[in-house]
Image 1: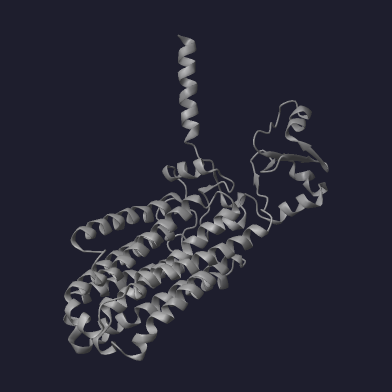
Image 2: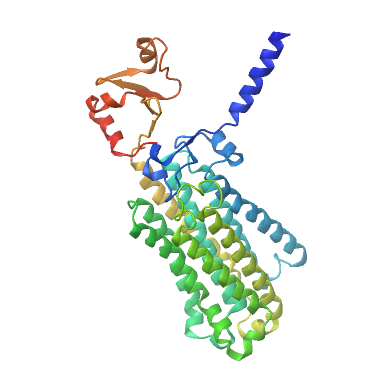
Length: 403
């Protein structure tokens, strides 16, 4: 009976440990994995896929970053399916820009949520995850350009020079700003310039894309403010303003570092306001598509495949090629070694050797020398006071603030 109880207890412990995620504080981490004013709740920087997926259900500082975009992704997926029953996305070309915008919305939400979930696989994987994230935001901004041009452009700007250049400039913004600019910023050292560079890489395409719509809802040419969609578009811009403000200021954690590490830090609020802005945007586009259809088909004609879904596919292919190029640049450099400072004065590293007094030991030899004390399982022991005498290739570990 006691044996059975002990066996059940061991099984429960194993199940509990399976769902445990070891967390680290900012002073234990490499700067690559740190977020401004977030002091705790970090996952290990060398994590397997199973642990990454399990962390979605644990209290880490990335958990709500995942859910605040994954739940909206499911909502827009359902919304697209719902609209497919009342709109003919296959045979009606006038609906193709809306379909493209919905697909790009689902793309950016899913890429963002999984970038946050899988970014702790390794430092290289972290870069690649966010390359996809930034590129998907570029696809979203370009999808908005196509939808705005086909449904929401002001009447007095139709068939003008700006109207004709709107999509080509949108293509350049999506490729150069969101892919080259934002992805390239990951190779910069942490600084205000890097932060501004990344912020501008997203804001410039969004502002350009929104210019005709801002003109329409503020100047109100040809009594366009009477349109039912205008009020919804205005609320979209309010939500977009708060999205940019929260992202740029890192509020509220800037005011109380460490108090918002798990819940309600700025990136979670940024995700929520961005999702709300996107929902308002989709609602306004649907209103414009229905209310202005007769007028727009007469004024500019029906959208062609190559100026809607086909062009989105071309831009997507180019952006995926750029992601591949940036990823190759990341993988050409050796994987950085990450070490973890523990309370007992030892340091663990994800290598297969232990260092003491300039001597490098295998894990087995280390455990034999220390009679089972300081046992190494899947990581490595280093005595910090002796690490400076170690081989030069390990001294570089000290240049980073340690995970």
